[in-house]
Length: 484
Image 1 (cartoon, rainbow, N blue to C red):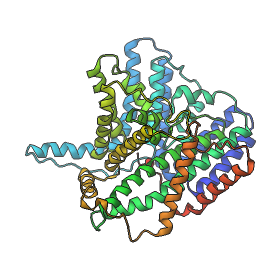
Image 2: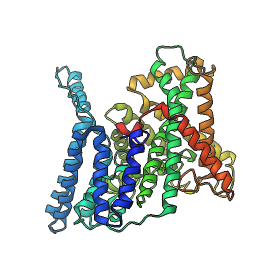
Image 3: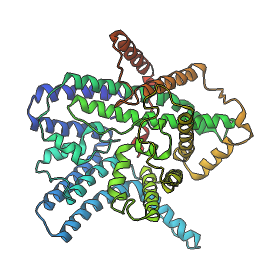
Image 4: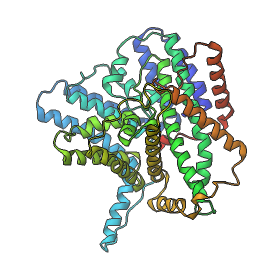
């Protein structure tokens, strides 16, 4: 079920009513209702893949229960590896089987050995990369004794399948989200209103900004090698895709976090205005925070982090970026995207400048200075270049795109005949609104915290944003991160 669908518009009020009015203050019934609603939400896409969530839930619950009774270090480690193996095997089969099979055959072919591979027509279960990491974090934290294993199976099942963040995050840690299923939840009007505002901002980012940008981006990417588009048109498409993917994914996160607030839950912040970053280290502290901190805590730190000298630190950092790229998809384009980001990061790491920009840009000022503006622009452009590989279907396609983009036609006007003035205007207006709102509210939890004392001014902004969102609901673009 998509957030930007009529199905969800019907589903959410029904669940909200049952949760607060039918279940009342009964914690057990509330949790049971969340599990049922989450399974309906996920099964709406394809009910057959519910068995993956159920199996993963049962495995990690039982592993946690056994870890609470066993003190032997070797046995505890075996149990942990059972949990990791089950989750990784599911993820590896559904997401990476064909990739590894193709590349295995390619290696043999390189040495002159013919090796045939049977391709499987595998459907990638939505959200599998997200909920497998979430359940693994529970087993790892229980193993490390950072978390007491739960005895409440319903609460654990609700934690694993919690529908607002089930299919595209944030990837919640058991230490943060699971305890929230143990305590009674009471309706808060202020909390719910704040959630609705965050959802509205998320819908605006997704359905207005991201989907408007997608029209231009898709037009260029589908025809750049068939039509005589100037390099400037490809450059503009790369810029707009960088905006699109941010608004698409952070928009989903805002809707997920806002929806969670309606039910009395607090999810972690997943984006912190990353395009206002002044270097790549700051960018990665602000982009997809739930995933980057997951890799930091469960891969980077266990490998030694930065405690064993510069060479080991560089190795660990590079490995995390490689894994991050590969996590996004079974394609060498994602690996190269990860490598590029690692290369961007390395100079900062080696010069020990990766912790320079810890505060927000222009902290005590309204506008950034020239240095900050240049740094933010350079960081944005570097990531826009890397995202060309992220968007491309193949490495060859990405290189061809880059070749055309930096050709002699780069200085020509980026005009596309099939793209109307109205569509162009909607992109420009929506991006301006996005930048102004997020810059003004960069100190806040999300980009729609209107602090004006004038009620009429606030409601005017809410109305404009709502009308723009409703006006463009027909664009119907799916969420990009559903494929990961």
